[in-house]
Amino acid sequence: MKNNTSPRRRGLRVSAATAALLLAGLVTSGCELVRGDSPSGPSAVGPPAPASALHYTAIGASDANGAGSSVPCPPFAACEDGRGYVPVLVRQLRATREVTVMNLGMPAAVLGPATEALARQLGREVSGNFVDRQMPFVPRDSTLVTVFAGVNDVNIIAESIEQGLAGADVQGYIDSHARTFGADYSRVINGIRARAPATFIIVMNVPNVAAMPFASRYPAEHRRIMQTISVAFSREANRQERSGVVILDTMCSPASYDPALFSRDGLHPNDAGHAELARRLKAIVDGERSSAAASCATMTAVS
Image (cartoon, rainbow, N blue to C red; front, side):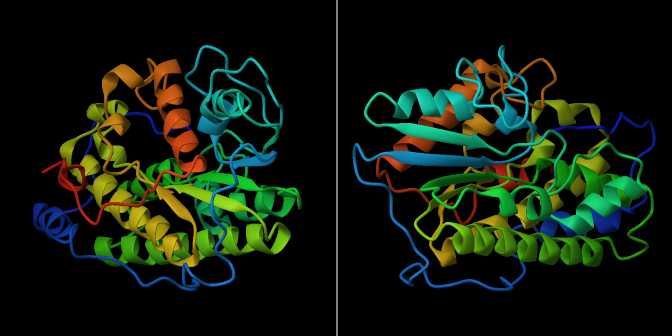
C-alpha cells in the first residue's frame, strides 16, 4: 500500500445528506459479481497437502514488499531476511516443507488499469496494476498464490471524489468503481488459474481504510467516503469466494486497526503487523477454515 494524498484543509464536495445516505447504505449496498464459478467447480483448489513442496507467488502492492517493517524488500526479490509478511510466511512454511517464492509485489500498484489511469490523471505516483503487470507473470508451477489489493485503490477513488470527479452522484460513482474493481478482481483470479490451474489462492479482502490510524488526519466527510468505498471494494473481493478462493478477512479483523501493529506512518504494518498477517496466512495454508464475515462493526466505524 502507498498513500500519496496529503491532508487537505477542506472537506469533500458532498453534502451532509449525501454522506448520511452513503453511511446508511453501507450494510445493504453491493454489486453483483461479473463472473465467478461455484466453489465446488473444477476451478476450486484446496489447501496443499501437509509437507508438500510449495511454489508460492505473492501479488500485491507495497505491503507485499514489507513496507513498514524493519527489513523491507525490493520488488521481485526473494529477500530471505525480510520482515514483511511474504518472507516471514516463507520462513514459517519452510519449517516443514520445501518452498520457492516469487514476490510480484510493486509499491503503489493498484488492481486494474482504469484505477491506474485515474491515479495518473490525479497526478499520483503509481507503479502499475495487477491485471497487466503482475497476473501475467505468475509462474505456471505456482501452487500457492496470495492476493492483497484495494487500499491504494480506495485512496485514489476517494481523492477523485474530493476533486469533484463524481459530480452530483457520489454513490453512483462509487458503485461504478466497485463494479470495475470486482471485474478486475475476477480477471486477476481467472488469469492466475489459466496460468497455474493447480494453485491454491488466498485473497485478503479490503480493510476499512477510514479506520486505519493514518486516516485520523482527514475530515469526517472524507473518512465516510473512504469507508463507503472500502466496504464496497471488500465485498467485491469477498465475491471471489464463489470461484473457490479462500478469503482472509481483513475488513472485520481487529488486527487490521490495532495501532500497535502499524508502522509510524499509520498505513503499513510494522514487524508485528506483518507477522500477524503471515500467521493467519499460514493457518489457512495448513487447512484452517477461513471466510469473510457478512457484516461487522468496523464496516460502520466512522459514523
